Length: 207
Image (cartoon, rainbow, N blue to C red; front, side):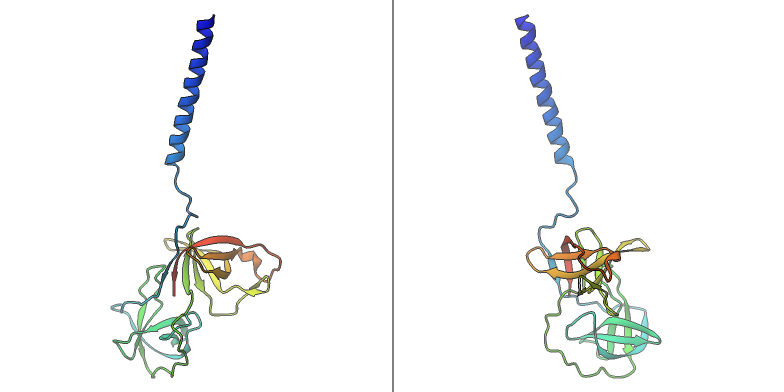
């Protein structure tokens, strides 16, 4: 009886050890959360000159989306593009609709009139487009900004899957740091007050 009891205890111990081993192995094989970011990358975007698509138009004021020298708000026919980036090596031409987060190259805008005189002197433009840890891409809005908790929602976010674009909320504020944090709200928060934001880490910022 004593031997049998001892054997039972040993079997129970071994069984527990095996379960712990497999649990630890399973935990080690679990994917890392997509919300984990070790550091936010901040990049000043300089578009390459795309080939092929050249359109004529004019730029009448500096960009609303990007607050830096060389970024303009331009018009091609009845369509507005903002930002369009001046290319120093190619006077009279700009690159419009390029988006580094979406990896789109945009088109070349050939000016029909010279650019107006720039009033900007600060190269520190601040975030224009950024990718959050939840993989949504947020872009600066250039129209009327909806308030959330009394603050303007400066960026509109979306999930891009192939050719589909799904709205995915608004961002009112970014807090700088080694890891930047975004105050993100659902679309339904437009015009609302006393809404708690979701704090989402920022993976990458383009200025």
